[in-house]
Image 1 (cartoon, helix red, strand yellow):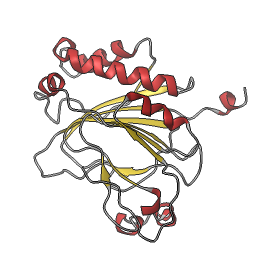
Image 2: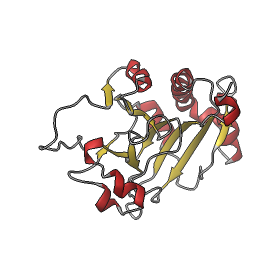
Image 3: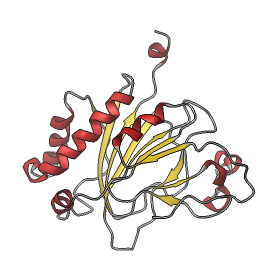
Length: 226
């Protein structure tokens, strides 16, 4: 896992990233100065064993509206829809429910969608910022999401549609390790402070990623004004 690059010319400033080995760190994303809370946790062998059977074609891209009360049923429905038996993923589902519980506490009543994806291709190769309030990402198998510190980002290049080489000012991107849980902010809360990230390029490597994502959707106009 690549560590965040440090710009030797930058002045010392509070970090917009909160990192720790306890799930308590996730709640720090609620602070206005933080755009990433990262729970660094070890791999869980029981889950890895369950997911070892998955191929890239098993769970294609899809986004599913859910609630905390229906979350496990919604996950089971997606698994069954793609020919997978939910009972074969008992430990995996328990962990997804754990992450959902943390996320729903931070979503402030917003609509939440989830994704379960298996892929051996390159998704979102360009560095970007989400148009979401909050997004949770956890890669259970394969390389994790790559992200940049604020100092590394040329935001003018980002907004203009420039390639990655122009967006990344120096150093190398950091990478979330498997099983790490990241909750990141998009550009809805504070323009210019959303976490810049991308999916790792893996096409042709023979690797399959298993990715879980939760999105807290933006509030509608009616929800914002009531």
